Length: 505
Image (cartoon, rainbow, N blue to C red; front, side, top):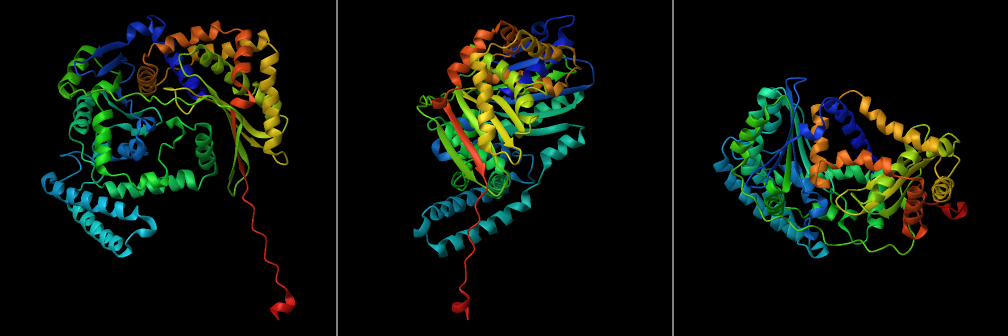
C-alpha cells in the first residue's frame, strides 16, 4: 500500500542514521514479559525525550455484528479516566453510572422498536437519562488525562483506530517515562468508561461531519461496502448510524477485556532511555496485568470476485472516483510487486499517472494506494481520481486503464526501473526521523506484520523484482472481473414545477 510504502521509506531514513555504524537489528532491544506483553526499545540520546507507544491488535475488523463501531468508541472512552483520574469520588460516581447504564439500555431497546415504540416512554426515559447524566457531572473532572500530560511537557498525546489496530501515542521528556507508565498502566487496570452516552452523541456528530457531509467520506464508505461483500474490511470503522445508536458500556467493557490484553499488544519505547532500567520499569507497572485467551482471527474469507461491480454515489459535489482490485496482503511476494507498481504509477511528477493523465489535463489528481484498507488480511490495490472539467470520470477511467494495460504488455524500461529504486534509496540519506516516527513504525510492523524485521526485508525484496514480475502481477490482478468502481456524481436537481397561468388565475 502506498501508505505502508511511505512508512517504509521513512523507516529506512531512520535506518541509515542508526545503522551507519551498527545494524538496526542490533539496536532494537526486545523483551517479552510472562503475561505476553512484547516490548521493543531503541536507545537514542539525540534529545532528552522519549516516545512510548502502545498498539493493540484491536481494530474494527475484530468487532462482532452487534458491536460495529465499538473499537473506535472505546478509543474515545479510554480518555475519560480511571477510578482515580477524571473523578473526585468514584465510589459515589459508580452508583450513578450503573443507573445511567440501566436507563440507557431501556431507552435504546425502546427506540429499536421503531414504529412500535412507545413515544411517551421514550420521552420519559430521555428525561431520566438527562437527570442522571447531570447528576454524574458532580464527580467528573473533564480532560484530566490531557491536562496531566500537558503540564509535564508532553506532545502528541493521542490515539487512532483503524481496521487492524488501535494505537496510543505520546512524546514527553525522558524523565517523565515513569509518569507515563503509571498513567497508562492505570488506564489498562482501572479504566472507567464514564459519560458513555454523552460521548456516543459526539461520535454520531463525528460521523455526520466526517462521512455523511463529506463527498470523499461518503464515496469511500460505499466503495468499501461494495468491494467487500463478506469480509469485515467492508464495514466502516466508525460504524453505521444504527450501529452507533446501539453501542453501550457493557459492549465496550467486553471488547476492552478481550482485545486490550498484554498478550494482544506491542509496546515500543524510543529515545533517551536505559533499556535495562526500562525493562524493570515496565515490569513494575504492567507486569501484573493478566494475559487473556487471544481473540480468534477473522475466519471469513472474501470470495473471489466474479464480475465487475459498479456503484454511483449521489452528492452535491464535483465528481471523483475510486477503482479497487482484490489482492493478497503482506508478506506475499505479489504485494511487494504492487508496491513497485504503485510507485511507477503515482510517485511524483515523473510517474505515469502524473505525466499521462494530470499533465495532459484529463484529471486534477490521480493516485494509487497498495493495501486498502488494512494489512492483516487480503486487501485492495486502489486508484483514486478527480477529473478536470470538461473531462468526466469516464474519460479519467479510460486513461487509467490505458496505463494499467501498458504494465501488462510493455516491460518497464531499465531507466524507469532504476529511477524508482533510486527514490527508495534516497530515503537512506534523508534527515533522521523523530522518536515518535520510529516508535510508530516499529509498533505497526511488529503488531500487524508479526515482526518488525519485515522492514529490513522490504528493500531487498524490491531489488529482487523483475520486469516480468510486474507484467505477471498486472495481468493477474488488474482485470475487469476483479475490479470495483465507485463514482461520485452530482445529485440531479428535481425539475421545477410548471404552473399553468390560466389555472393559477
